[in-house]
Image (cartoon, rainbow, N blue to C red):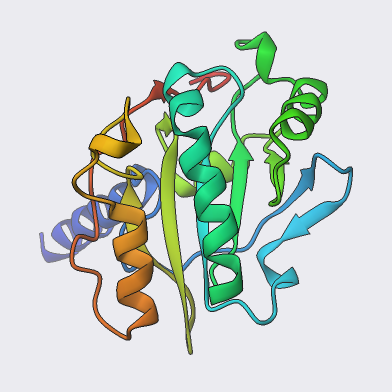
Length: 201
């Protein structure tokens, strides 16, 4: 009976790991290598001097993503020089969202003059690894002695339509907390946007 109970406990623990979807705050992040719009492969290990990262799952087509585009550009201009580069990842399947194909990404990034990488998650392994559900969906990573840890997950701010009316700037506040050596005050919020277009989901 004890042996049966032990196997049941092990089985339940295994199931809990199996059904865990993506990272949570405090988790260590595994690196990835994805193709940028310039054709080169990019990984987090390329940024040896980074203190952390602002990873944003984004796309070409979502109206919410478009509404946040100027704010994402502002993050990409402000924080890389402070040690937190911005990396955009498009996780959408072009089979389900034609406007999110790699050629469309190249054109979009050129039109918007992106100063940061815009990566194509063709296999959708990275989106499943992180567990992002929307575009945009942000993961702020903090470099520690153990590796890169998730410090914040969620929305960019609290106003999807108008940047000037946002009263809470979640990503900026999280990065500023980390730069000041503080715990992130608000480590998790709800990401608002279009659902990620996953194949075989």
